[in-house]
Length: 438
Image (cartoon, rainbow, N blue to C red; front, side, top):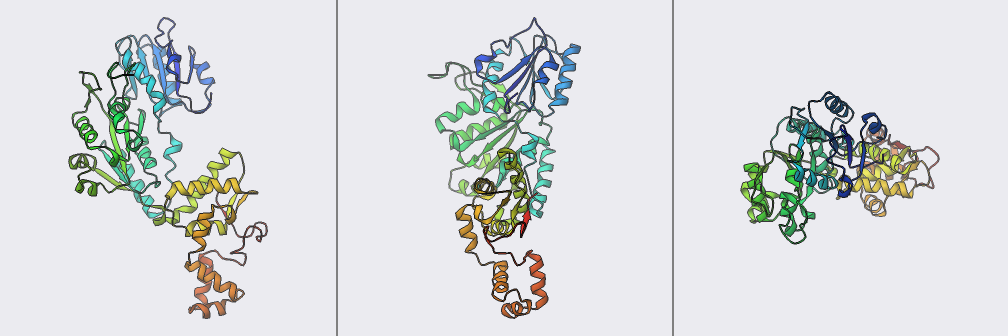
């Protein structure tokens, strides 16, 4: 089975085949009547699990659900049944043919949702005090069902933080639906969020489930919440307060049960003062407030992040990069990171492309990062320049810097300097000044 499979379907009855037309939805699927055969094709975690059965209480059905849950504990599981019946709290029953339209809409949405996987959630990297505090706050947030508002600059990892809350919450076995509010045109946002009935407008040939209904029993993540227009803010607020949605072009109202997590890189309080954001919606969202700090304020995490990205690109590029040169690491630490963690990941990817061997050197990094870092006169730079100018005579270096000789020794150890520091890739002898990233 290819990575990124959308749906895994188990037929448990030859007499009940309501999803034979599933291929028409354009959804990637692996299907079989035998569970052993089905799982034999699986090499990566699917995004969705569907089970067709006549009755939820049949022993074969119960055994299949138990096995699927054991194999894929965090994947949303839907049981399509001809009859109602009791089932696990981490499984959703859809009755056929009563819920046919809902099922068809759900199948259409499988391509638009991205479940939170353990790999993604574990990407919240860092041992700094700031990150330890954030992880504590996220763990506490996961224990309750209150709305969460994440703030922070672009690229700091707000979505990863939101995924962490979802993964450790009671909703982890249900859908994770992510929406970038800035990426959806205002004219389409109502249909995207609340869904629409068939024939609601020109081109609406099928019912659309909408993000809120797709996230039923799970978590809805609204990124860039500050980009929502005032009209859509009012509709979102009503849906949150009433826990209901009315699809566009429909008179019916449907109940929804979602955990809302919102994120913004804008000061919402200022948007409220400028009458661009509703104060009542802000109060509704601002229950658990967590700020994700920029990378420049937690530079002690850069080494761990580099190790994580080196491992990631080793897998992606099928190579064996072992470490970063000390000069490259010092450059990354000195840089101010306006693009935060996302920019750091990009820099490591560029270095992988530029590399000549198993070590990432200063020359492999993007030019703008090298230029900016080289222009900064840090304490380490001052010490290194003084050491080079005195040919590494510690006594003369201390006199030049106006400090004691013991201070020079202590700072040499602090910054891990040796006589190869400051060399370029061409100058550095093998294994000299190498800073392991693993």
